[in-house]
Amino acid sequence: MTGDVVRVVYRKYDGSLHWNQPGTRLGEDEYGVWVGAPGGTPVARGETPVNPAEHDHVILFPPQAWYTASFNAAPHRTEIYCDITTVPVWPTPDVVTMVDLDLDVRRRRVGTVELLDEDEFALHQVRYSYPADVIEHARAEADWLVGALREGSSRSARTITAGSTRSPAQDGVTWPDRTGCAPGRPSVPVRACAG
Picture: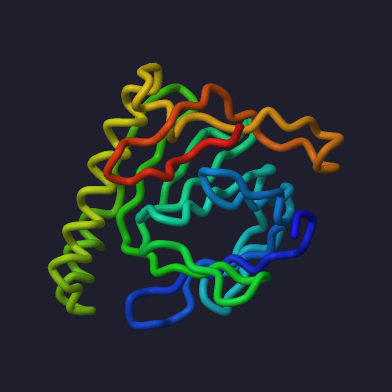
């Protein structure tokens, strides 16, 4: 339900706890479930607390895609950060979980797009014995996201760069502005944006 506290749980392929944090369920639309967290939210890597979130952010959990997308409020220098993951699942209404598949795609606020952690992805393919279809899905999703974020002004690319026009009063918190929505590509019908 909107307004409920949600535990966001990323795991590694061997099942070990990876990044995790609480958030507030902001709502669900045709693109997925949106969870927000204000600056100062506690974040942990495994069981170890790390620095709290610097700025407000909203995370999209698409129901049929191999990524999650975090939209960071200014002045955070990373505008959009996409973790390549298995498809997010909700084992209970207050927990969302997925397997982090190492690759990340980041768009800086200045427009630079980067594919990150290819070395870790290569290492973990061997360490965790990623199946061929997992490698294929992860690589295809990362490649698509790099193109989409680089082409942020085209209709097909706006599916990941777009988002909500919610007012702060609706959420009680000032969430990042995510503007310019478009439908997703046919092969993965649910993409990133809210309406």
